[in-house]
Length: 281
Image (cartoon, rainbow, N blue to C red; front, side, top):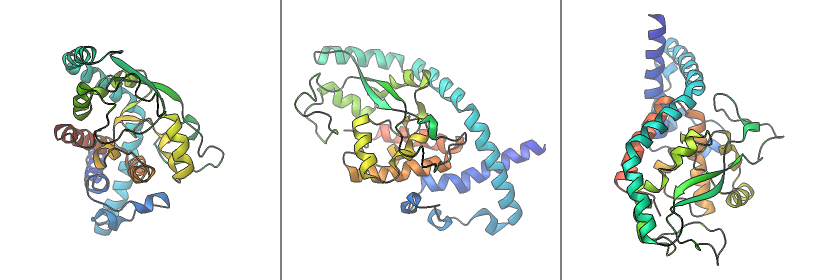
């Protein structure tokens, strides 16, 4: 019974005191410089109501987060297998449409930067070791359905996508709005290169620019990149350094609050993002 009580307390604490930081409109400007104030969550800290409950909640949440961090890879694999099984017919149709719509390969592979294993902690906390801060993560090849012309960057080099981007094909625009172009990334999850939930994987050239212009940007590499994430459901597509700076605050907030409850909420919010075609370009 005592173990059940610990789980109940932990889930209650996560739901009422961890999730609101991610789910509600909050001020996260202090994340780059310190902890988020309880007041920014619009909820009193648990110890304000009861010191005993506050202590129990802190211990229970810590234990539950440790357990989740150890089994998160299993959850990712199970989720990826289930998603690929259900979405296989959709993926086949999407592949056929891409093949018929424009010349070029059906799939698109691009180098992205993943987890920085030299600068991580088991529970996803933020490491401040100066020897590892800013080091790039592990590069990997992300897999997606092709949504742009084959020569999309022939004359411009690497650039962010823009609204009504002329390089996007007709079918590509539909796949982007519905996020179907990202279905193949579940294969990256099975390969251990990505998680289902996490910061968006970025290209090396943009990582270099953002590391130079956005303080603390390398910290987002302390957890595996994800197909969806807090920044993806709370903010639009980042097409400028200013956008990246804003999204970084959500990524750092997620780093501090990562748990199965927060991940579950992000997955639910992702359905709304896909349904209303928010943020895609």
